[in-house]
Image (cartoon, rainbow, N blue to C red; front, side, top):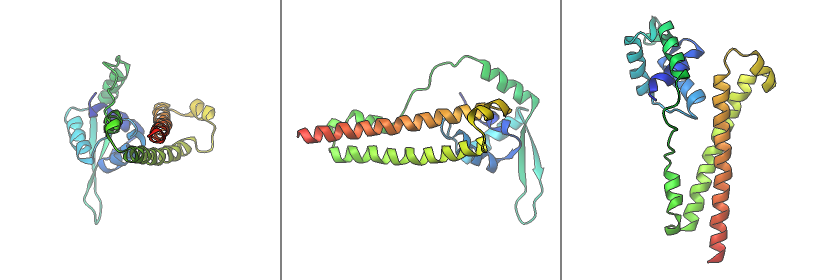
Length: 187
């Protein structure tokens, strides 16, 4: 999959500048698709050239003018067609920590434990951020109320995937620490 469809999906939230889209990626899509602001700006230009998004210039005083991007009907149709296609192949997990754990028998156990703890810290921070997003989406409603009343459930469901992933990372890292400690006790 290309960045193209992630940008089109993000624009389902409504009109956005490149900067706003970058912030939206940080909050809503970061758990499954990362992109730098430079990548987003380049992709927005391509999408505008292809007629999948439209752009308008907003004049600003004391600041550079900004371009606001909106999904076109052609863009919506292409995104809808993409969403209905079968997934070509599941994503492969590429994680440096997993390689380090694979090789942990050759490493200092304290260093391996520290790596697991560092990842746990990152996972806790992501979980806290995702929970804030969840609370903002729910806005005092129950999950059932939200899912019944909202126009778009996709962002909530992908947020749930991010929450589940980070919770699983915490559990796995805790298991890594336990195994490291048990093996160290045997030495």
